[in-house]
Image: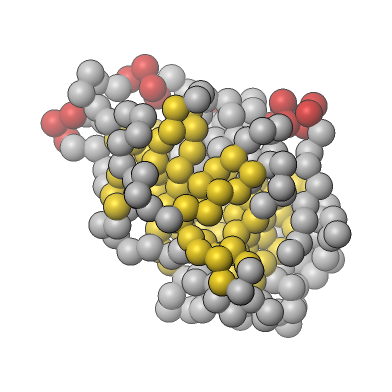
Length: 236
């Protein structure tokens, strides 16, 4: 399995300050009965900044804009396809972890590509990605990892199921994403369309669920929570 060097504590601290101002204060806008927090990701494209050089684009996300990185994406583009990757990585904060709905096939973890209406809750089958282990989960990784569910044109868009912590409390979320096919202009680039999470600890959420109009909910526009940083890949 590919392993990734953890960022230094000082770099981790800086990442916590990079959340978009679009959602600053959003939690204070919730009505008393609001539960689902929705964020328009602005169709943000996460790309390898310099394709074909063996490095990658590195993108931490703070889903709830509380200053803590909840999960990370890596994008690496190599022509004609050997080594191009779209991966999910555990947060780099010491002791951090994130759960991704997925499965292990022949010893390698793959993130599930979900349709709308799938329940994400404590009964779901999560891959537990931890900072200590440098864990990753594949969305699209060619050609050696054929069980990647986001790899092919026509089946490269869907929902990612997520379990993450706000403080010490467990929450559930979805993200709607598209992974570019290998033959595209930006191989394995990831488009972030939108995401939502349940702000009541331990309560599940369905993929695609948004706040009820009567509950006001939380609508944070723009690419809130996106903290883009880049670093070199280290292969062990």
